[in-house]
Image (cartoon, rainbow, N blue to C red):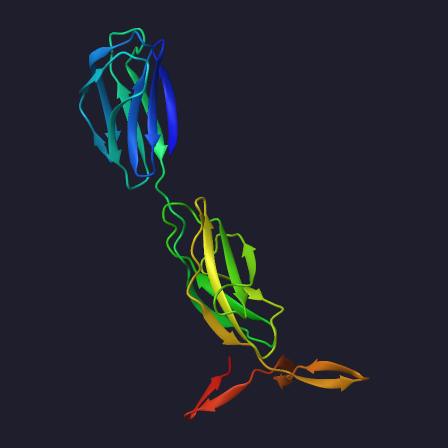
Length: 239
């Protein structure tokens, strides 16, 4: 719940209250101030009301003039007419922006490329920002099927977006998720995506075992070999 206030007259205070669901208009003044036909109006949900009448009694405590359900971001306005009192004064107008933004929706997996024995490039596209601009993105990954064990965070306005994840374990199945952030916080993780890194063998070099990474020469350029298998007569890259 958030309150915003504005002074009016010698002892009066107008208040706009946002409960998260409703927007409410409140008013108070000194204990000697009253007006049984107090003129007031509002702008809520795109509706500008005509002048209304409220029985404002003495007592010096807060009195609620009205409340409305607000489901989208907007600016609301609280208007007080000429009250005929020193305590409340008027006319006075009070406006404030109301936010109904939420955390962003989960991004969507696009593709996985450049798979090696210890790295891969993964690409996502943003989901809905839900009323507040996306300002950061995160990739979660690991060998657990249930939740990310490590994360990589980065900012930027690119969409689709992605990153090369390094330091992966050769020949092991890894899992990836993506999520985005706005002024309301982190959104949910995307649907999980899994793949296997390329396997490697080890060779003994001067008494030290090292990973042997196969390369092939293509048009005079050495490139890291990527294994393929034949499945039902169709060649597919192993992942």
